[in-house]
Image (cartoon, rainbow, N blue to C red):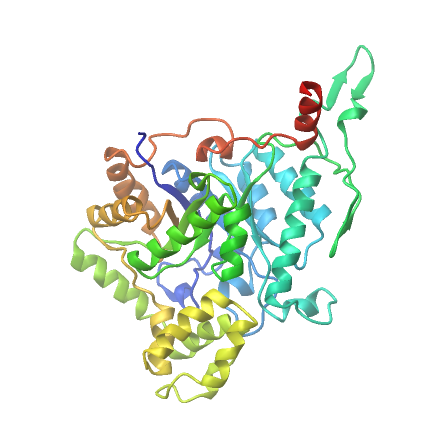
Length: 444
């Protein structure tokens, strides 16, 4: 049996995922809108043979939003720029089904796939922040269950548009003057509960057939959606035992949908802090934690509750119970992590600070980080990780000091296999539905 290998992604997060990361003495304060900064990170990640770059997104901000989300590039724009300065690494962008037209989205991701030579991926999200609705002329934000029903139909529409063109539809014969085989270009003519889209898409099928589908939900609806549709799921778990339960649950759901669970990769977020000694790594983590103010920790806490203002409460008092129901209307998986700490009786201050500076299990020497990554892989807590860079310079340390250890142990690739993003991940190219139907008719 072939040894399983880690899948690694790197999250392009500009000035950092937290509210105070930008205050570090070595941080580049304009990183979230700096092409040169992202170019360096992308090329470093590719030097480390990372499978993909990952860009998160949000379509609603306010004055309490984190610095990165306040002022940052739109995902497909920056990924298109990075496609020109990289050769092998996958390019995964987040786009919401709640506030994007499916024809435009299908066209944009197909374009990125062509530009990059088959390296695009789409992180499918439904958006939880209620403020998003007003930015798109909507009266109200869709309820959680309605958003996932929309996502079900939306993904089928986008995949149908990506299949508008069969792989050999473009003849391009100068002698005969035939540019297109019209029998191999197909209208979608979709009319559903939420969407009406005629098609066909005005760009041909991409080099990998369809971009790789990611999903980032961990709620009940999110797990089922990922198990049915996603090829990779980005998630958050606090420890290995929690991760193993999530892993087993989603893989079982995938099997229940008739899928091969080995073709769904579960990649939790990780913030490895690396030091030459254990003490040095711990000191670096404390350096990061020392940047966080209580004011911003409370702002961060509010994000999972539709940007609720927690500064109005006594920080040394209990978590306000009247806020708990907000989790049902916003980020269910994020609010669930908060409410679990609240059930332990922790004061609001400690809950906020813990979540603002999560230590996790990945603080240590290069050998210790490699050991823990390998343990999560072998114990089936994950198929890999989505890495944040918690402090400036940590990506280089990971690539130069942790990657060689993982490669030596045979649990991480020595080089890219060549070809598309699907080739890198070991995923098959989806067969065009119209080509498949024609071959079945011929065989009948």
